[in-house]
Length: 259
Image 1 (spheres, rainbow, N blue to C red):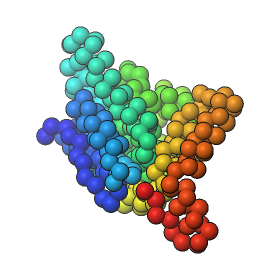
Image 2: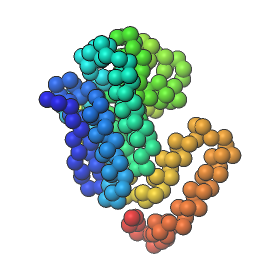
Image 3: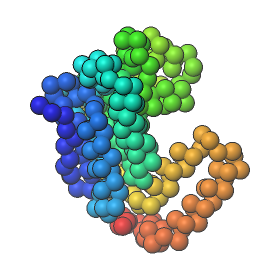
């Protein structure tokens, strides 16, 4: 069966399902391209307020297809470079997408599959989920932004352990380290991710978009730059209709209805 990215929706949440069961949901150019296309379409759809990335079958994502990588060794280097660029376009699209993106992880998230989960704003993982950067086991180095995300989220020694030693880490340990938001019972990751999405969907989309942008900017901004950006976002959001609704609802002790 060819790899595919299946798209459905529940309420205001777009569900993207990694579907490459013959190769444990390994990523490939077609899936990456479909991911970028799906996010581009959903960005302009006001009915979609969040995205959940999940999997078909028992495993979240095996990362790269080793058979395809072996075949690419017989091709010009540009062939693999173009494939990685496609993956990186998807990763960048997730990071810069103005709506919340949640990874619902069951089973293993390996290599680029781990990087894909790290690119999301939230990670909900089953208690038996396993995360591994296995690149060094096959004499390769990371892609998908895994080194970027881990080096910023963890002390150097732990990032080195994951990336150089290929150590497997469970969902609970990554939760303790701050990389996983919620740990669920096996089989419940998607349901819990959709519950989280529902909470986010009830909040003002423009405010969440601003918060995501501010989080993305913070590591590279000086304090003065971040303060200026916070001011600009705050003023713009205050004069948005949703702020009027939110403040009125709070004062009237009722649930707000954001658009």
